[in-house]
Image (tube, rainbow, N blue to C red; front, side, top):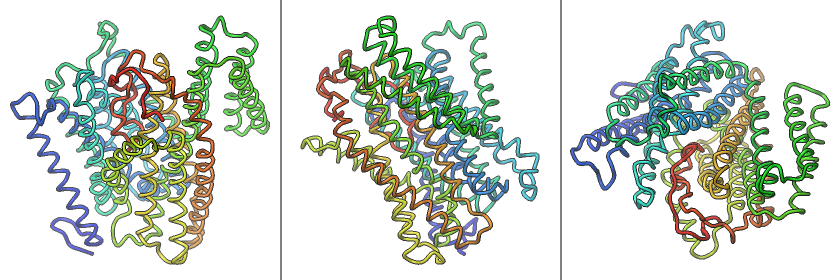
Length: 623
């Protein structure tokens, strides 16, 4: 134990990590305040509104990741859920966080505008994080009446993230004209705020929550969100009128409050769904499947033939019937229907058969690109299902079975964000140099590399744990190694995927395809909860529990490597579906702003981001 100025730390490592995080956070806070209060209209060549959004996003990520670092421990140690139950709850929560931006982005685009959506989301988040601090009697477990307040807090955070995260990055792009060369540097600065908030929160809130008291960790996260809200409200003039409703007549006469009422209705639905996690699975399976089927139907029948009416009747009817049968069968299978898996398999075979038949009958490059996009989306589900073990099973494993040198396990949640800050610029340079030499891997190849790396991360951890003995605490170096491999994998997939979804989508269905990408992230997070639940081994003893976790990690690790290699083998065929020689910017202006700065999470580009015009012609980055 090491005595600090105010707290007692488990080791000198923990003390210095805490101090550095506090210094970094305070430095950015003071620096941001200085920049936004200067009399000049611009600071270091950028509008002051950028730094306002930087501060708001930094504190929003501080609150979110501060809570995320503690959530699995809070579920297990305070509310006394089993590891399996806590993991499913955690997976359902993170899945809903990824679904909400689809709705939040739509309501902002169509009705209230980005600024009001961000403000509404910030208010919900502030209440949600503060409600997390009301924990009640910790000895009562799930009999504690404050449990309902806890569910409400999670629901508020889910919906608040949906409104804020889907729109704040869009505001960044709106501060600049379409031809402004400062756009990419602006997103780089904004991206720094994301990572500063994520890294410092895991250290500061994680330490306070695990060692001082849950209410202090969650309370500080709520206080951080309140600071971000205050910044955003006071700094409204710095946004220069950007992010306002495009169609103010749609919210005139009090209609605006109906949108906020709909947001509160979403809170009620999430309050229910987070308690009955199977509802989240049904939602993901039903709505996500329908979304994919609808997108494929548009490019296969409507666009390929010019209109729905001109599409061939029999194949179209067979396609719709098989799609409906597949979705219904999957939902029935999730509820335990014995014959449902066979019906789902038969429907899937028929559906794929129709798509193949149409591909042979009529050549249509846009349809082929959407096929490639769906392949990438399915691959991303595998990646996120394993990557998102970080906040659940891997967090518990670090706490129970790793020699952390006296550092609280939740603090290790900061490692991913720190790695991204260090490695993202290197990856950007690497891709650029490889592209100049004509050696840059294709998008499908990068996805395959990402899945291989996430699998190797687990295999390295399993090897490290077994090399010293299951009955001996695993050296902490292997936690750093698994996060390193997962981060390099993430940098091969997340920003690349955001770019690919935008580039491969026809303009009038770009939002649908991006929504499908979000649902893939949500599905991956939900699957991550199910995988994490399989690692729960309460009551079987320390050594047996650790062995069970390692067995699960070994299994999913090898499966991931196999799937990743399979994706790499198929990548030349998928690349052909991209038809890179015919990708052109006919209208110019459809590049996804912020894609170069993405990587920490899929929402970073926003749901309907601003665009950056390029010269007409083939774009090399799509190789």
